[in-house]
Image 1 (cartoon, rainbow, N blue to C red):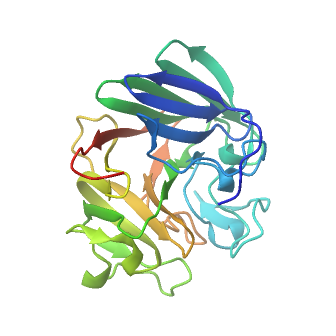
Image 2: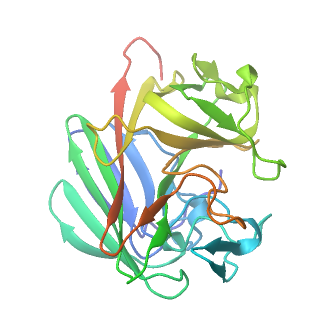
Length: 301
């Protein structure tokens, strides 16, 4: 892991949690710690404006890739300016590459906003809020359509977790979608990819989307003596509405479990044929995430 340079993040802390945040570089997080144990990986370079080196960044106004950066919606064709030099020209929306503004801060609470009116064909406002409590960190990501016409919209979080030889992951999903380069894309029944039972994250590299998650996402870090619980929901934390998550597990010393509101390639060259939220003027979409940590005294750190 690269050595970080001078810390340019601000800090929110309380109840054993410490959250490093950076509104200037994409409204990102530079780290989350529980009693000084890393829940997320620490940003590789605090002075870098590259969100891909961060601990977590927001996905607004959509998650993941748009094939060829073009799509049709309500009878019109749209092509977005490239924002990535990877396998697809457009990825993760625009908020992760732009400056956010802190609009509210108290001892244990923070709110940031970003307003898009240019790159995305529709005018919108996004907000991120963070609340620290004894029960964990409550994070809310919300988008509001400020345009006069309907707008397709999606949200997501892109957290990076440290990966060790004994890291375990568990959650329940209704379907699994392969990476975007698989054609045609269709849900697959792949028990060897399932995390219905706790399994070592090192067993299989992937970049798959898991649809209709139920219950908590559990990450266990025995090497750190830490258990991480992620609770996710659309609308509100009491909602039974399911969400999705992308698991990205490269060969590096990290992996990602990304709660998202829609599956990969939901916005594509078809006329928005896969499930995605359509917002009317002044309508909002929210994605809720709660992250908490538990320390196990039985495991030596």
